[in-house]
Image (tube, rainbow, N blue to C red):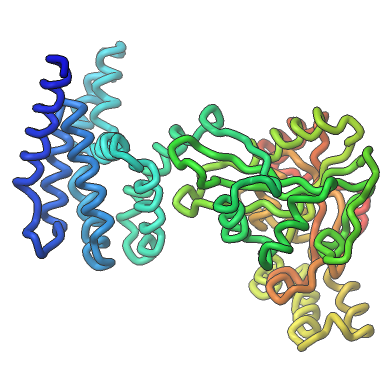
Length: 435
């Protein structure tokens, strides 16, 4: 053994011995007070080897906490590691009086919560990133009742935006030759259209006219971040039934013209608010364009999950009466199967959903979350499809209506800027006519 290796082993042993000073008894687990002491120790450490050992022990201790102790730990993180207001004021004054690189550096150090440095050091531990994602996911259940925890959430979201930026993401195609463990995760994480077992999954990833792509991050290994399912066709799909039909015969044509993105599922709830979808769609468009030059149309087949909720809460005098009339119909059991009610519902609901998607906004973006995502990415509202998804969830959320958003590669930037700067939802003539 080399002298360097001997010294390294000795240092590691000393680090482990120092950790044991704070370890709980043989029959116990670390409590919140102990974990906070470990946090302070981790922040004071300058050696990387000892820092890794402390970070690992701390994260293992966090995972062992019960729900009540975990909430207390979150609250202590929010209180203990805030910026010092006096220090921030002093550094702000210093920078105002003498604006140079050093005073700016000191101001940035003063303003940044010490939690962010704590999280960076925790990330040194094996599986540190994955555990921190789980730590943030655990926060969500408390945010409404304990608003001060938003500071902790903001810090984690800020760091994740850097750690999970596009440069670190890897795009992979998922097909029937993909390892079974990963295919199981695709079944588990599908959030839009449930995958009913292996046969259903095979119909989505194996045929020549179907594709599935996912983003991965090196720190999360074989756990995907987000995935999209695509149908390759010669026309725009107007219902999910035709895409997922069990008896469908794969299109044997080798020159499809349309790619239909019919399901996009986020897999890591702890990364909520960290955007991957826009990168995923645009990169998949590039991948498919290179593989299949015949493709000239890229559309989604998307739900309208906020529509019925808006019908119930809408208080705009110009549409309120029509919303009430529509609700009288769709609140009746099995109304979609009754020809008369179906016709009356369509007459009322199609103009209302067009109004909802084009006109109803929050902070200059569509109120509907799926519309906000796609329109914000630079797509246009291409077509509204009646009775496109008659599953129980879709009927409750969107009265069975689905939408095609069109990604025109030549107009993505123009559409994005129109939405971002002027709140304009770019829509086809077909949609505008419904208004």
